[in-house]
Length: 173
Ligand SMILES: Cc1cc2nc3c(=O)[nH]c(=O)nc-3n(C[C@H](O)[C@H](O)[C@H](O)COP(=O)(O)OP(=O)(O)OC[C@H]3O[C@@H](n4cnc5c(N)ncnc54)[C@H](O)[C@@H]3O)c2cc1C
Image (tube, rainbow, N blue to C red; front, side):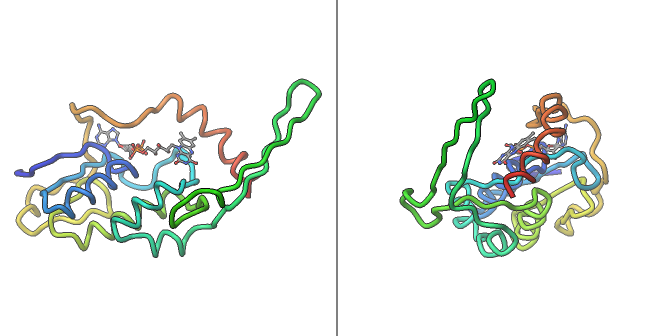
C-alpha cells in the first residue's frame, strides 16, 4: 500500500485530520480497528471553534441540521449542603457560531466519512463504512488488528467516564 499519511484511528480526530489533509491534495489513509459503532460513550457537545473547523471542511450544513444548539448553560455545583449556581452564555463570543451544538458522536463520524467518500485523496480501511480507491481494493481488510503505531484512544478513562456522561448529558438536555 502507498499513501502519504497513515492515520491510526478513525475517530473524530483522525477523520477530521484526514479530511483536512485530503482537501489539501495529500493522499491520506485512515485505519480503524472497530468493525462498527464505538461501544464507549464519547460525548456530544461541540464548541464554537470545532464548528468553525467543520465549516472550513465543508460539512457544517449536515452537522448543524443533525445537532441541537445550546446558547446558554445553567450550572449547579454542590458544595457540601450548599448549591452554587452559575451560568454561561455563548452569545458574547465573536464569530459565526455563538453556541455549542449537541450532536450524536456516531452521526458526526458518519458525516465526516461521507465527506471523505467524496474526496479523492481520502481512503479509510477497516470499518464497514470504508471507501477505497479501486487500485487498493485487493489490499482491503475488515477489522484491522492491533496496530504498532501510536493510538489516539484513551481507553481506561473512557470506560469510567462513559458510565457517567450519558446521565450528565441527559440532565443538560
Ligand atoms: C465520556 C466522554 C465524554 C466526552 N464528551 C465530550 C464532549 O461533550 N465534547 C467534546 O468535544 N469532547 C468530548 N469528549 C472527548 C472526545 O470524545 C474526544 O476528544 C474525541 O473522541 C477524541 O477523538 P479521537 O479521534 O482523537 O479519539 P477517539 O474518539 O478515541 O478515536 C480513536 C479511534 O482509534 C481507534 N483505534 C485505536 N487504536 C487503534 C489501532 N491500533 N488501530 C486502528 N484503530 C485504532 C479506536 O477504535 C477509535 O475509533 C468526551 C470524552 C469522553 C470519554
